[in-house]
Length: 111
Image 1 (cartoon, rainbow, N blue to C red):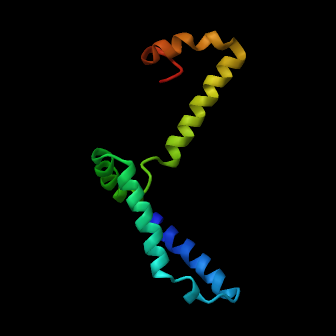
Image 2: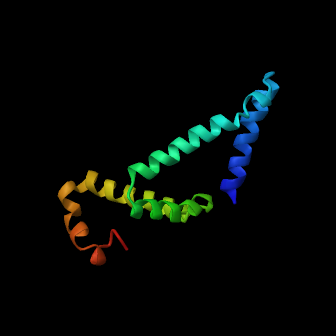
Image 3: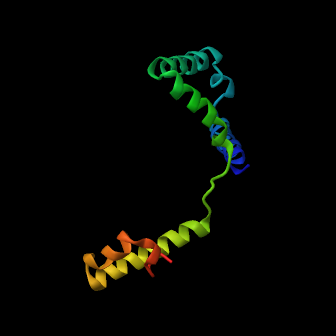
């Protein structure tokens, strides 16, 4: 939902700023140019990819409008883990994390 709101805000700010600066919005609406640009890009995409890639891309397009599956807490946990690893390396040396990396299930660092 935020993605759609973001697109609306971006378009509103760009076109609104253009209009407030004295530009005529009619000058931006050129349907033939839009057709040539997007048609050419789509044609180049079709020519440059095989059927499998085209189907995978078309299947993935709706996910552009969904929110991220990653949240702030996940990023904070990842940064905390990275901090712990780098602190251990700084204090004990690079080889000190070898056992943790080779067997993360039994490592106190990754639990």
